[in-house]
Amino acid sequence: MVRTALRLAHRLHVRPLIIGLSLVAFGSTAPQLTVSLQAAYLGAPDVAVGSVIGSNIFNILVILGLAALLIPLRVSWQLVRLDIPLMIIASALVYLLALNGYLGRLEGVLLLVGLIGYLAVLWHQSRHHARTYPAPAPASVTPRRFWVVAVTQILIGLALLSLAGHLVLEAAVEVATDLGLSERIIGLTVVAVCTSLPELAAALIAALRGEREIAVGTVIGSNLFNLLAVLGFTAVVTPQPLSISPNALDFDLPIMLGVAVLCLPVFYSGYRITRAEGLVFLFLYLAYGLHIVTFTTGMALAERLEGVMLSYVLPILGIALLYTTVRAWRRQH
Image (cartoon, rainbow, N blue to C red; front, side):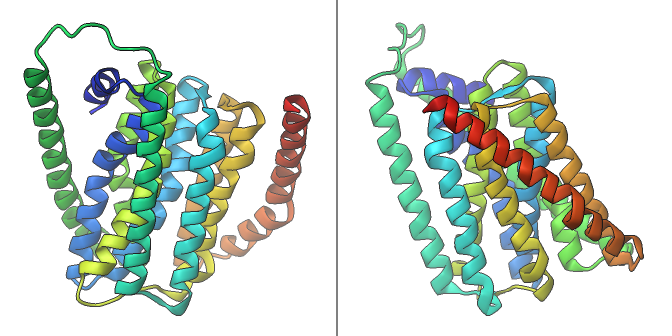
């Protein structure tokens, strides 16, 4: 997928970031769509919704954290000014639509309308950058052969990703059920992590190849597709509305929105993600996962961990982000 994306960006005369935000993000979201649809039809809405929430949190904190440890990631101006605010708006929209306790067909249609608007923005961006991005060199193969090979690779990749998503769902639900975990925890952890493996592979390979824009764009684009395409399409086509558990409303959705908001000051501070910031991302996910485990098992550590995070870690992080954001704003203005 990464190699095909780079060739398409070169042939279509657009920036690799646009391809990462669209084609690679859509391809890596295919397992998530497969899993959510199957879970909804099997009567497991907590898995369908929880896997999207957990995947979005995992994408930012773990995938970007690991990629930044390999090589500091470059963040483009477009991401900070357009795509990240859109991701924050989409996260807030899902949270607001879910406040009534479910996502029905009307809410799904609204999310799909947002997806169409986002795709229109990407199309406009690709047309704009086509006039400024360097023209491609003369092709060594005929256009017909190029498109046949590219489309074939994309279809094969999507088919394998969808098959893998089906197998992952069956295995994850069976194992987690044997361990006595709830459907919500299954979706937030096991299924979310497994369906995020394509994004992890695409981002790490892109980072190792030096395509740092694709690494970041894949994650942000995947989160937008998860919220708008996966939840929207699943809510529209499934016979019953997707129910939202109280725990998801009180904890999971606010965490997902907070992680989306966290990206803005981190990315704006230097238009990059440093290794230190990657470590912070990984630490935050470790704390999130530890809280889920301790809270689910009824351990007293859950309250202590929550107190430490709310009293010390998050305020210190907020002050640090405020300082770096103000310093970056003064430097740029």
